[in-house]
Image (cartoon, rainbow, N blue to C red; front, side, top):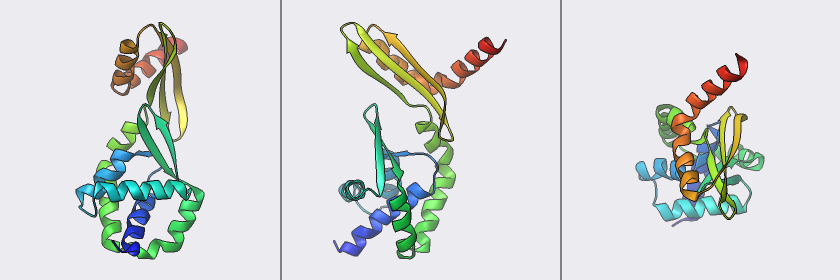
Length: 172
């Protein structure tokens, strides 16, 4: 594969991340590129790995999911090489983001994670993040890993009801 083709994959990832104001998961990044059949999964993973090594993107890991953000040096690089991304690819990306932005953001705006504290105790951390600000950051202790997993799995579905309940209970 020519190096300029591989560079295009990296620029596409930077472009996608520059067009959203929230982190995207590995699955979200790869789904667009695979859906449009620009390249295969392995090339995308290699591109992501190299972008991380070069510090053009940053990663944070939440419950086995890696969330990617573009860094300042990634934005600078994108500005410099932006002209190498065709207008057709940019239009595809913009269209994909316009159609999926709510779903993409919804997935990453309610992170839920747990950790083992000691025997018989798991710490579950549940958050709601809106425009980069934690509007809920809740940590609960539960006795079993099974309960921790259940809470994490239900969090994105139940978080708005819980937020509403907390606000009305605490303000009334």
